[in-house]
Image 1 (cartoon, rainbow, N blue to C red):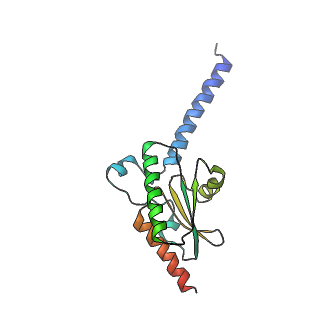
Image 2 (cartoon, rainbow, N blue to C red; image 1 turned 45 degrees about the horizontal axis):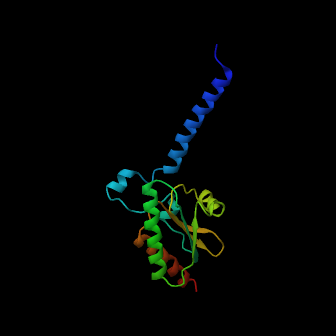
Image 3 (cartoon, rainbow, N blue to C red; image 1 turned 180 degrees about the vertical axis):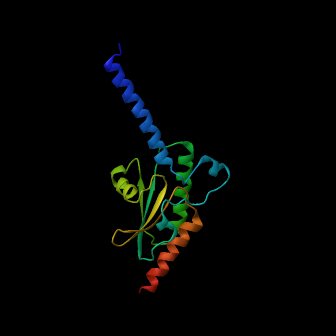
Length: 161
């Protein structure tokens, strides 16, 4: 005879296993694979069409979300992004950047990630004075792309004066 308590436990374990696979697939998404990293593909991977066609607006600040936990490749990617953002901030005096670590600032970072459907860190969000996201980059950040987007928003801001 089948033990109902044991069967429920196995069912729960099976469902948790399936859920774990779904979560991993949802977290990794399509924007990054280890093969891309090995092939040297370090181009920024956006998660939405909005990122490819930024809305011209008045950039107020950036929200930069990283994590201190994860696999080795995630940690390396986040460290490189932190270095890049340090260089961007040196390059552009007066640029406001809100730095959030997902582990330490989970409750503050989570709404940005959920609302903008970001499942891959690091993430950089370009925010206007009303708190609206003008654009975003998630996964890989490169100096040229980040800098160009900032310049695009600065030009739009200057032309609105």
